[in-house]
Image 1 (tube, rainbow, N blue to C red):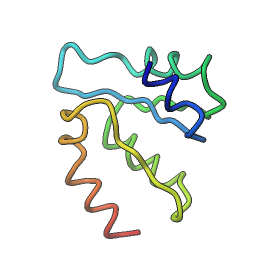
Image 2 (image 1 turned 90 degrees about the horizontal axis):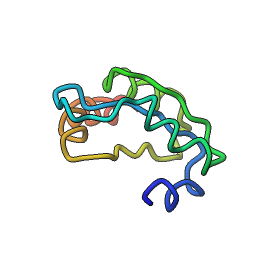
Image 3 (image 1 turned 60 degrees about the vertical axis):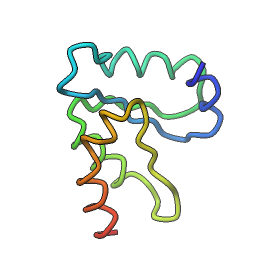
Image 4 (image 1 turned 180 degrees about the vertical axis):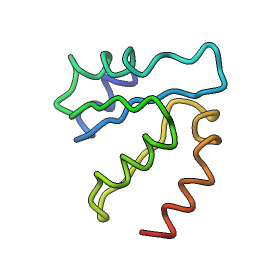
Length: 88
């Protein structure tokens, strides 16, 4: 349901996973959820930090990068997101 609601609003999606949770969904599965419902370009990057760096590098400075999925993934990427925001 979330993918269906968000799909029209994103040009690019980077699917990754929370590393420390054994219940985390594999990024390839997440990417597959976006494919049929979206015109977004979907990329899989298994390492969350690498996924965030990729997303920032591929995003125009006037646009937003959204970290979503769970508080766990947001918490894992928080310090890196702050660091990258200071650089750009």
